[in-house]
Image 1 (tube, each protein chain N blue to C red):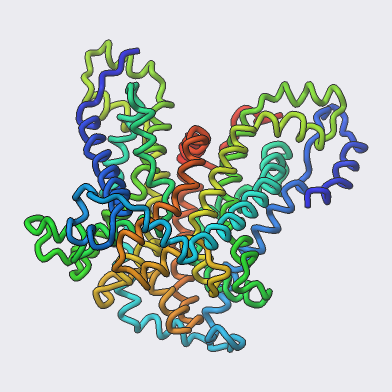
Image 2 (cartoon, one colour; image 1 turned 90 degrees about the horizontal axis):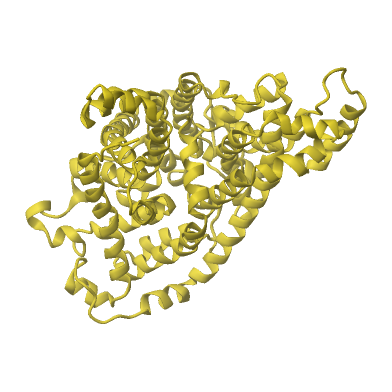
Length: 272
Length: 309
């Protein structure tokens, strides 16, 4: 098949690449120069004296600690998702009872519940549970809100497992338990890595729940650290942007290795 | 948690139905995720309705207040304005992002040699938090130290955040910067799924690239367009981080959209009842849209090869 290139879209994509690339370049360049150099040279200039001062300064401002908190939240959220979503998806795909259909509908509907809409009662629930200003209070709602998309992605993957394989397992008299661990889980590996990457991304970048549900520096995550840094030292643009770079660094490293899983998973969200 | 499913699994194995040789998992397998989701997403959703009829400062206990919050809301001109602003920013977002992401998605679906490298850079906004993106653009567009101070011919007085029109423009632009890569990805996937035979047939009929785009690609992308637009609408209505960091709803209340207004009412003015009422309005709008998603996209009927087993 010969599909001729779409020149208009090609041109557009170059313009867009410029729009994506330029701000990222400006950001990197800004973080590598002194505050005074940046303000006198302007954002578009190439840095003359390179320095890593902005990065070290961020660490002394507590970013190392925020980093660690974010890591804890992310690992916990991914653990919850990996524990509960595969059995959920398995049951939705295979049991086909009225209850599981209802459950699937519930999660589909959940796709559109914006976190903002429930933030006030969430504050109420978490406060009453004594989890305010505690990382657990951030982890639980963050995990809950990544369930719908992960369920959607994983059911999509599990539906593609061929029926013959289940029958072959049934001939051996395998229990759902064994079918799950010996057939469904190994064959859903791509989907599993997608939901790991996706939920990790959600947790790492989460902002609203930490903003409303934590208060003290000791339970602050990195997005909140960024936000506070901006309100307090907003004038120190290189320092601020260095913090932005730091906040995206781990996720960018993961992206380099798991790009395929992430991109394919996100593609699947749009439907057929 | 999943061990709770064990007794049920055992029972199922012993009561093997005749003919149905394949052991099926019961709904107990879905229970942990469902209970968790109910507790942290659905219960709060019910609570938000309850709280909207109360007076609560966030510290003591909520007091029943009847329709007070709702009456106040109807007469609150900032609330009415915030709904208009939400709709305006959402519509502008859809209008800007849809053509862009369709063109880019169709382009990216083709066979480009350097696509792997390009898309690696291209999809970076997908990885960044809304916080990071907003801070980046706030810094870049800073009136004193940002790009506008260097390009006065383009940006006028350079204070983009000081006027309603340009502040809204910035919000729409940053929204597009953040979300266009995601929608491009959706369109890319959908474009790849179009049967090549359609293009071959068009080629034989002598249809050019443009004709093929309008007569094959666009119609084939219809479902995806609906899904993508609905996602844009839900995302647009609930834009929050961007407003908080870029404009703080200002100048004045010129960019105070509903989601941000809800946050201000609840967590800044400590009027959690009033905030809940605004939140409920958002929930109702989002639910209506989500019902449309499920109906129109046919997600709930999405059962491929395992159907009828």
